[in-house]
Length: 310
Image (cartoon, one colour):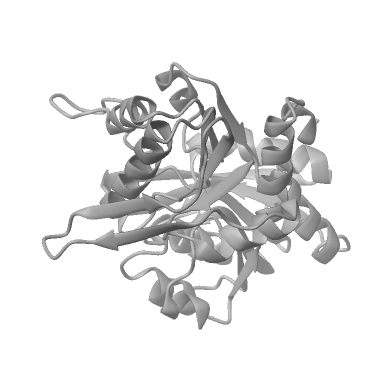
């Protein structure tokens, strides 16, 4: 087994290697003066299982291209099986046609990954479950739910908790959490007039005097999240926390979070935090390294991955 890490999240790669008790695969990633990516693998991979860990986060196109080139290099080096570990699947939000003459970019990226040589893909909390069907190779969509559930149980066990879905699309996820925690459920009716612009309109459920935990798969500009928090505060919620898997945190996200009524935002390290996010006292980071490491170990040994979540 060899695990190669792209440049998107080197700390997570090292943590996963520590869990697996192996050294990261030796490779170099350079950039020509015109921006072309150059990859060179520095060890023999012939007939071996190769895993590549690379989140396609910002800079999205550079990281995606690097992932594709690493896979091509390993395929040409005669690796037996190539598994792409993509903790954050960029372009996942463009998963369907929402208006005429727009692409389904999540499908395009799936085709690129398959063509580049991936035999299997592992991702965390895909934005839409149907993305698994865009691939003609096995896809393991694993979940950060065990990490987030453990954190909530350890820190909010004595609180009157309500799990809040910030939009209709996240109701299934929020309901599953509420059931596991024996908590109540609330839903925010949201209208989106343009990309990255959202307006919270109405709250369905009882939140007055409770500890609200807003649950989402990602936080990008934090518009949805902070407007949901403001709506909850206006309805008399005692404390407001938020949990998400992917901290994209672009644009004005940090300023919005710092000025919002959110007491704490719990995220995972599928995407490395930028400097402003690292310095934000409201953000707590949980590591997915053990979860990814155990998944890689089970794939390598041909054991069940789904039993991690049963």
